Image 1 (tube, rainbow, N blue to C red):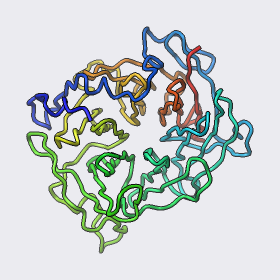
Image 2 (cartoon, helix red, strand yellow):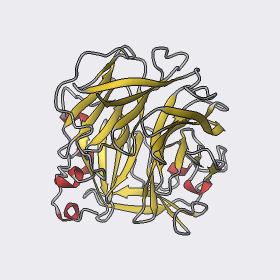
Image 3 (cartoon, one colour):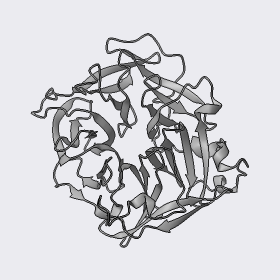
Length: 387
């Protein structure tokens, strides 16, 4: 963990006034990859390529999957509405997993396996018969936590390599899940809720990770000095009926966030987005303080808006996908300054989802969730690499 962040004086604005946190080197040092220049933007976006994507000079794109069509070298028909995604190392290659944000029984997760040269080897399903699988999270023990974005949604632990059956994890609560991040040092999980007045949750397992069968689910309570405390949920698994209080209403003091979206853990920090106020937040786990790194209202005209899925680039910048906005993937530096990495053109009724870097940091995967046909929700999944 970068201890310098806990010693640095934060800006003194009240939480509701939307302060911007200058985190300096703490964010700059997020990278865990050795080739930090792999996706460093050094110039403006060029004209759209043959796939309709505007990229910086020196990058190219390819389509790796289209909803309703079989993925190359497989019998797997790529799912509709591709959403949250992640990459996992497999031998000298990797696997990219992608949620399907479709209604029951068409929700779930698909996967594409690549060899060490980036060639597609196979594609397959790792979760079926669920509903509204929006985003999720990577675990340090190499599983993918897929989150259902419905009122009584659950989290499913899946095997990216397709060897083990998916497992439902009720201990992580029933609510309108969006995404989850694992703190391997503290042994806890952090979860966002996609509601206009949703909560930020923390799960502490009863047994050491990777055991997620039981534990305590809590919600964040933030005071006027941006200090965070946590209060336990008494009934993590309520059902939609008159006798149960929904999870997010069980702690009256819970701080409400305006549409929790993507979340990411890196070196003692929890980074997450809220779409209804276009903010990127940073929670310092050791200090238990929270600040706003980026607020679109303070960047007018806003290069980044419609904030959604988040990850961290090989260069240590935060990468944010836009749901709407200008259909861009945007990098945020240490000061919260935005720079577009790419833009998808001709698909204004869609959103960008599932950004994830290959384990070697040389390739980036993401989807346009509804592609050029918003009614049929025929998503397109892309790969970006250097020429």
